Figure 1: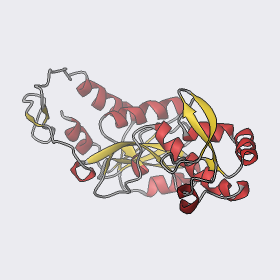
Figure 2: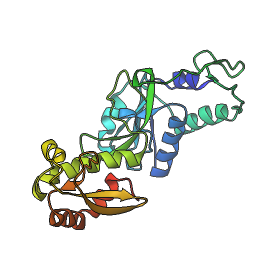
Figure 3: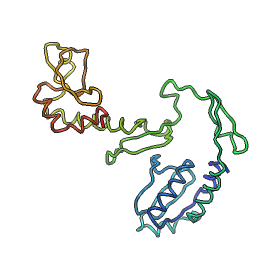
Length: 249
């Protein structure tokens, strides 16, 4: 069976887990064949959520223990975790690795286990060429950084970063911008154009933070202050935040 055929067999089903270990195992098995949680996340839920629903699309929904009556109410076919294990593992064991011709990729829509077909890779030049994206996004609910896998660029938000470091940098940039008014305010475009005004900046030098003062308009810096005292105080109070912005571990 292909992954698509396995997903078809699991449509509109529900199942229970009895432990966090079992929950993590089953979710990871489902993620391995293309399932995701809501919003496209593909990290296992390590929590006491014993009831799961698999809808007609490859998304896993879960219910808290207190919603057992709702779980029973759903008319989905109830299956066991052993059924899921056997269905996926018995088929995954049949997978083989193949060498792809240069410039080609597997045509998943038209391939079967018995007949693997190839198609030319799509040339990616601009954002519009992308079909899906994977990476990390900043939650608009709690500002946590979450992962997503193969999120459609046609149906969802575009604010997905390729790496977790990049997402943390963007979040740090937002925090820094909100703190700037309390450290003399940001340097305006007019002030950047004025070579007679010194700008006191923080920047990345290798894998460390460094400070300097500049006056040239050609050397724009986001983390910049009107005085040396403002810059030093900001760095003293927010060093970790600045390191996140510059993607320094």
